[in-house]
Image (cartoon, rainbow, N blue to C red):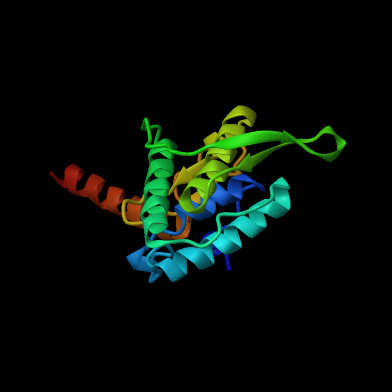
Amino acid sequence: MSATSRFRLDPAPPGLALVQDLVNTRPVAPYGVRDLLGTVADAQRFTSEAVRAWQEHSGAGGGPGRITSVDVVGLRRLRHDVERALHGEGPPHVGTTARLEVRAGGVVGVQPSGRGARWVAGAVWAEVMLAQHDGRWERLKVCRNPVCPCAFYDRSRNNSRVWHDVRTCGNVANLRASRARRRAAAG
């Protein structure tokens, strides 16, 4: 189960799904989901699954290796930095490296370097860069409901979604706005 599937969301396109999954590791109390970066064991499980899925798409080798308590702090910082970037804020704290390599058939790919959180950060920021260049980045969004930090991929024709689910988060916000308008009109 991916971090994104906990919220019954469709994953972003391959590659960018790693970024979406990282953001969706955050705990969300209203949905009863815990922080997937809460402990070393949880972070190891998340990185193993997310990196394996990303490597199937990217063709990158290696991996982050064993996750330590220092890496957990780095992964949480990475998650925060990606959320800031999704909100158009910055500059994020970036401490990572990755290299480009030419693979079989002349395919150029990204190969993260380092270990632990630095390796994951190399993969994540490479996917952010690729998504920014091909137009997918604008479609990866964080739900506008302040208590729901779910990252979702907006597949709407005009890229206008603001809620990860209009029936839950959108309905609550629209109901609040409607009540506020009625109170204002009643004076």
